[in-house]
Amino acid sequence: MQLKQIKILFIFLILVMIPRMAATETIISKKEADHIFSLTKPEWEAYAQKIVYPPDWKVVLSPYDTGTAVMAFDRAGGYGLSIQPLYEDNHSPPAMLIVGSYYRAGTFPPFTEKLKKEFEEAAKKDLGPGYSVTATYAQLTPFEGVELTVMKLQ
Image (cartoon, rainbow, N blue to C red; front, side, top):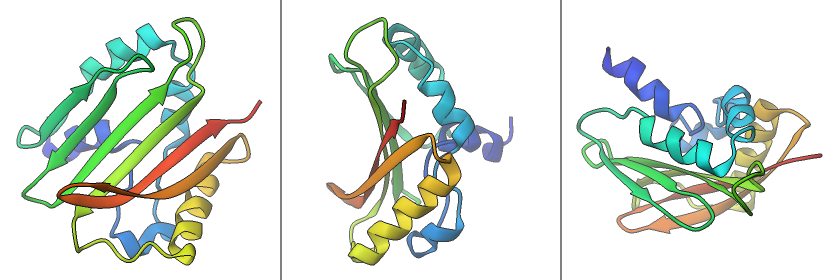
């Protein structure tokens, strides 16, 4: 499998862009968001174990009572990705999804209200009217970036 194909398997929900281009790039795939919001917690736990990453990325699975967070970092490239659905129980879909995109500290632009709005508008455009999105600045030493809180509307 080519490296590009492997990356696509994980970057399906994450920023695939230079931070300043947030408004013009796909931030979150509606197809994958729909899929994750259809999974119960046990189904997510199994799915998280099967996500394929480039071989040189450092991958961390962090189990929580609310659902496992999956993080992958390309230290050479200077960026990282994370995804964590938050579950209330084992039988319902997640209440929300936290999607993070991180860049080497100092390379991410200042997180202004304008940039926050660009991230939110781009994600809402990608996801459509069935979702709400809130962007927040995130710091995960030695990275900084943005985390999107995604909720599926009833």
